[in-house]
Image (cartoon, rainbow, N blue to C red; front, side, top):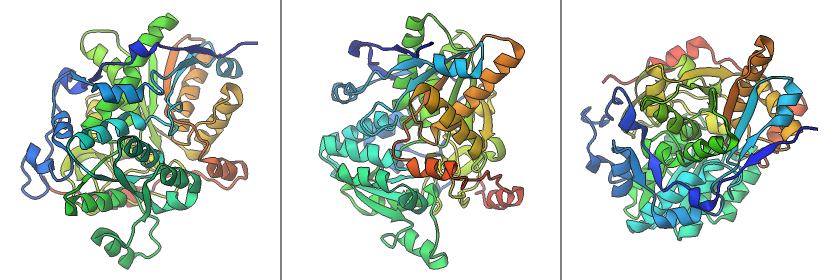
Length: 452
């Protein structure tokens, strides 16, 4: 019987720097725009929300940015994370393809999110910040920032999208176990939340709304800063430890990926795996086929518009050029809560727009079917978000079988699904359904895009 093969790195191979793809892009990304002046954003404009060190990273074009020693010491608790060769899955699919997955579920919070949470909490601690406010969809980011704040002695307030607050009580409990306060969003605690509840008392919430509430709290309290779990440049930067480790692990395996796949909601875990490989290509190395996979119910990359938009519903944030469905977009309550964001990271949007990365969307039922196929062969139950990457990897492996081609497929298993059992229970009971977001609703949301 075939066995799954694990490739480990020693602690000394934990990356010492983060990789910034901006340094290698053939064309620079569009500037961030101030929401009031409509002029390019200046560093001081971000100071109410972020400490200076993170602002510098957000605007940096430097290729390699050192990881502070204390941050590396905390990351060392679970990093480097393992790379697996999915031989049992290959056998189940009867494919000549070789399938590898980088497993980020080994972190204490169960996902890739602590890679940035620890860094953000540390920089805020160094700046004398007392409290962080944030949003969370499925709860992976909220639990990760709560963990990081617990490690570093900061208070943490998490605005959790209402539909996920109700769907995922155990993820909410984990956030509280780490010492953070969890607030269902929209909430009566902020001006933004009260306005939305006044117009729709049963609002299920969205990441855009939760971001608005967390930003409002940070902007109004001098001792509080805001932390974001995806989308922004510095968050994607922190996640590149994933791909940098993977480059070394693929060398140990004596292999090289042909196809690289990651699920994409805001873009952090996808970029974390893909950008170090794409950077190698941009510096004259070999080409890879890189695929960002999103839900059909929230298809920003595949059906949205590449345009300037706000990152939040209340339109308090700077304007960034990204693939967007419109800041007023209200996604359905499908179970991959971490992928229910109206926009995509500007850097991910940029490389898709430049033709360096492919984008596709997949339906919910196909994702859960792929997730269970993976669990029954590899033993790890994936988070609903990660099943999108698995579904695409399975589809590519099946193409290899049909064509008789041997290709090497690498995907990021961004987290486990141990706190998402209600989603699997609903799937197995036949309660879930596919959802194709109507063209007219997308057009309506996009009609409200700001003029820049």
